[in-house]
Image 1 (tube, helix red, strand yellow):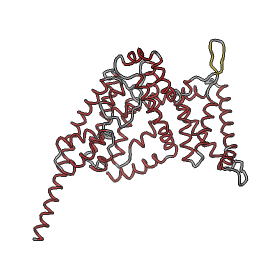
Image 2 (image 1 turned 90 degrees about the vertical axis):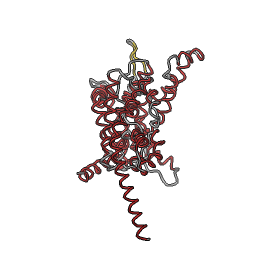
Image 3 (image 1 turned 60 degrees about the horizontal axis):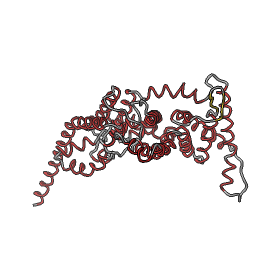
Image 4 (image 1 turned 180 degrees about the horizontal axis):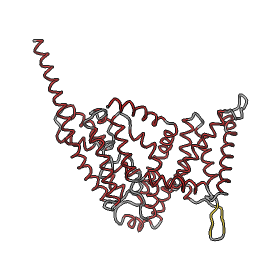
Length: 437
């Protein structure tokens, strides 16, 4: 049975992981993730989850205190749609063998071509761009623009529709002329698309994408069943030695990313947080110590295990495990192809997702604010910072304790098995020594 599953899943996972579109989406979001994490720190400092924090600093620095930190966070959060389009096109162009800089900037220009540039103020129309088109609400449009613009550009390059300069011309000049016709075709295409939507009932490409695609996908993708499926598959793939989140993020990351930005905007505006299920929820409240919530496993190892093999592994893995790095456990215990440990390894993240989701939906625990913390932030601290409430830390403590109870019988079973193996090895060594005497 195991071999059949492995035979079926390994090629499927490899195909998904190597798919150029999904890989480019993942790589593109990874390009802008450091910016989001760094600017999230500024947002967190400006709105630190301590009663009276903002008021205290405002008395010292005046009302400009919040403006200073908001200027940094808005520099990224108000432009996530256009940044995603640029980064994904860069990654997709690179993966397609094109000049990634040209691919990225062609996508950027295409995004701006489709962006509404007229705002009505009363009866008067003025030239301006609303930030809502450039931020989280423009992410799905940005993704589509990135993929289409790169494909058109690539088509022109493959057809050799380029202007070749004579030898001796500086490479920068030559590359610039090479990009002239492909770039022109992309711009012409999106120019016609803008005209088409302007005479349609939707008026803009943004309205079309948001109504037909982004809004329905967001409601399906940020539901409890969707989050449960995400964590089940991520853990299940790890059993076969495949980095599960690498596969699942290719599908879910754009949806979680949009939900995260929605919560972040609400947090900045001090309004009700709209979503329970987003990237901080997945990172902070479903797995502790890495995939499979293996920090609980390591705690059990230190509390009850007697096998030298497991105890030594625990000493090596506990510090990385606290910071969410659990490859030493996954491949050293191992969890890969281990039918005993894989049961709690799958159960714990799924159960954590269920408990956290329900607790936040009914208001027992505060929702995540959308602040994207480094994934290495230890539990308890991360729960408080991600929600701005002690209830986040309390939920993590409860789930971690529950995970310890779930892992306990399985780790004990494995410990007995390893102890028996160690005892047998020792006896075999003694027999060898006596025979030599």
